[in-house]
Amino acid sequence: MMTESHYLDTDFEKLKSPSRTIRHVEYDGCSFIACDFSEACFLSCTFTNCTFTGCNLKMLKLDTSQLDSCSFQDCTLLGVNFSVCSDFLFSVNFDHCVLDFSDFTGKKIAKTSFLDCSIKEANFSECDASQAIFDLSDFAGTTFENTNLSGADFRSALNYRINLEENKVRKAKFSWPALQGLLSKYDLILD
Image (cartoon, rainbow, N blue to C red; front, side, top):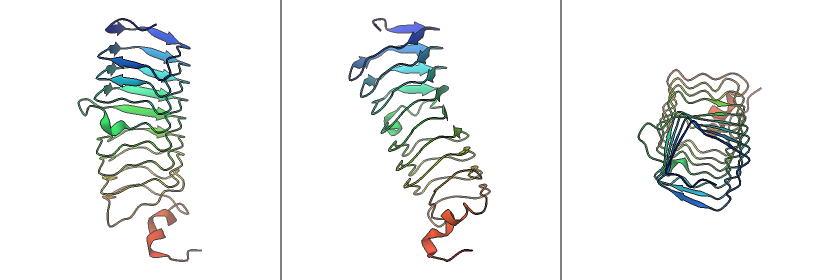
């Protein structure tokens, strides 16, 4: 089990460490495949160029941890609070992930890809999601307040509700009929 303070180009497969606390460990170029870190705590850890595939990361705690160029594919990240991660070099991408109830408040996630993800009841308040790609992602109940969505791509996104007066949406991309999510505040009847 993970006992070193630094791992380089290491593959972790089917590792099960639910509810475990791991402190001050660096992971560089590592792959996590089918691991279970549900309710685990990674405190002040560094993940650089790491990939997570098919992992259970429900309620994972990442307090003051650094995520630099990390990708998540087919992972469950239910209730993960990304707002407590280090802002330094924060860079993530998600493909076919469950991010329901996750929190990105205040994060700089410009150009981040969210491909075919469930992002229900999540929070994107005060964050910079400019030029982010939200391809085929479901935002039912998700909060966008004082969020920079300039140039973001919502053309195939679903169930979003975005207040145009409280968010920056210049040059953001939307498609009809999903465009109704921008007008819901006005209680209009659209055909």
